[in-house]
Length: 312
Image 1 (cartoon, helix red, strand yellow):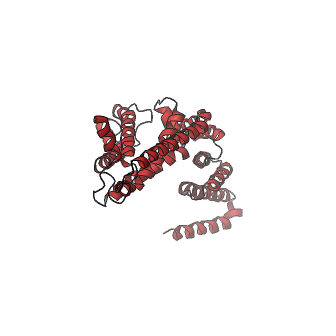
Image 2: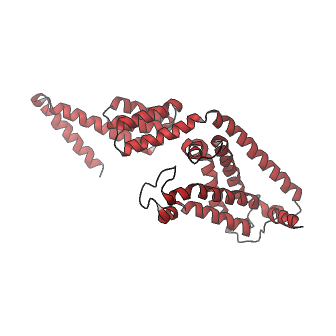
Image 3: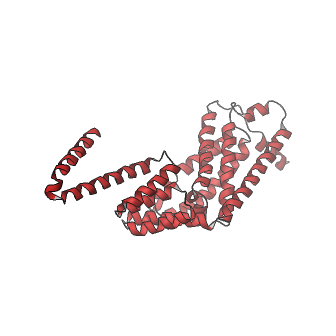
């Protein structure tokens, strides 16, 4: 009897809540949806992160979680199978908080410390947990209050759709399973590569913060060997080379990064700085010519001044 009541409670959520519940679903579902997609797009958010946290079979685990977030996020936006999805997300957020925030509190997180104060203790946890807290609370709200009247669940509740609900659950389960198998095939086969890329990229970023650009270049080149078409890696390798004065190499890598991702503001900024650095090098070279380059130095300085005024 208890099991039957629990089963009925899960598959028959209340749908008489406020219509504004739609906005809660849109917020919660959309965040899970894009976070799931980014686990595939950026290895450091998917298999790399799960590897650092010590999850077993990180390729499979990251793929499974990503597909749950993608499919579950879409279902929440639609208001379909709301309670099962909310339960899945609540469990996920509890695991996520326990696996990451204890290390933040103690200051020994494998993901590294926050970039700014507070770095450890309760303050660091409260700051770092804010998005997780929002997601779990909205998921609990949807679990208890239901999806509201503007939902597929509400439409299905008007008649007896028990069989349809069960078929829907089976369909979703098949989608998650199929997606996980696909992710496992692609991610686990190259598990060491994405993990190596994520680790090398993080090490390169640390070297840049220490202003050790030569070491940073080495790490980014290692990452590039495994993912030659990663615009983030190409951009940071170009940055490291530029800081060493290797402008030809920097221009080459910036160009490759922008071909792969034309709308890449950071790379555009760094590319402009590289052109400015090259222009200043030519200016100083002209100064060394003495009298022979005096006219050109004056003209170039004038051009620099006009360009500066145009930025205001």
